[in-house]
Length: 313
Ligand code: GH3
Ligand code: MG
Ligand code: MG
Ligand code: MG
Image (cartoon, rainbow, N blue to C red; front, side, top):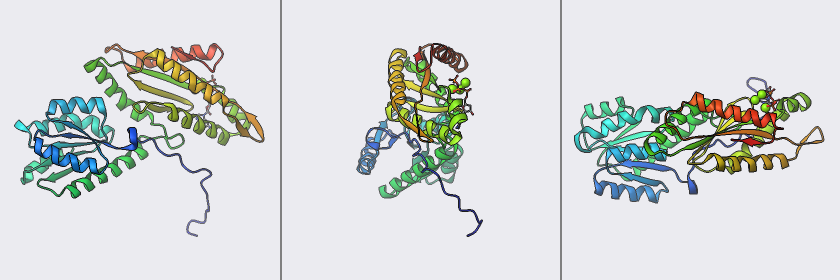
């Protein structure tokens, strides 16, 4: 054998989190002011299983982009007064950071128009008229790219949770939404209890097993708009848009109970684990991530000193 080693994966890798919406369909935000083009293409997309969010003005498109975090953006550059390309420029930074692909469509045959679109950050440029089948396959192709990039750059391999890099992007979006639509969110800091003891007693692989089981359980219980992030080591953050601190506390309490009931078998011994949580509800636009993270950390600390296996807000 080439390389000589015959290393086998001990456990199959965890399915990465993809921001799947209800029904498993992917969401395209279609920004198009021409009702005929919109209707015709929309029908084709829906036939292929896409959930289509339509916005008929760049303003509505921008606001839907912030609030709905679509999987893909399709922007018609032929909207009045260059507004399509301007919208593309506005959206690009945050879309690029999340690997949300942007496809520009336009009936312009000019090289200049294509250059502008690519320069503004479009991943693809489709000249109209185009065969709907080709548009659809190019959309699907971008999703494959997005999933791969996210998996490599934004998702933690062991737990399938988003990483801190993703958190830094997502928190900006949450704060923007708070400012624009006064929609508060909760942030919870979660930390496994006496985790070092598991590693020290049963080995690092057993510790990894606990991290995986904990993550699988949390992911099974969160809402589709929530984000589960590995902040570092055995410390995680849950971002819960539109969720009050009180509700977040209840949800986390039930997660703690579920983990506490899970029986791990290490070296033939039955082992039980727990975690603690600290919740902060963010509803002031002027708050900074450093400040509310600190509050969540203090709440977590209070759960720890009050006996662990608790959540505080
Ligand atoms: P506390 O209840 O106060 O949080 O105690 P603790 O033991 O959980 O906290 P401490 O910070 O002392 O230890 C955390 C341990 O987590 C130390 C570190 O080696 C371990 N750890 C961090 N990342 C991983 C990982 O990916 N896998 C394993 N197995 N262990 C990890
Ligand atoms: Mg610690
Ligand atoms: Mg710990
Ligand atoms: Mg810790």
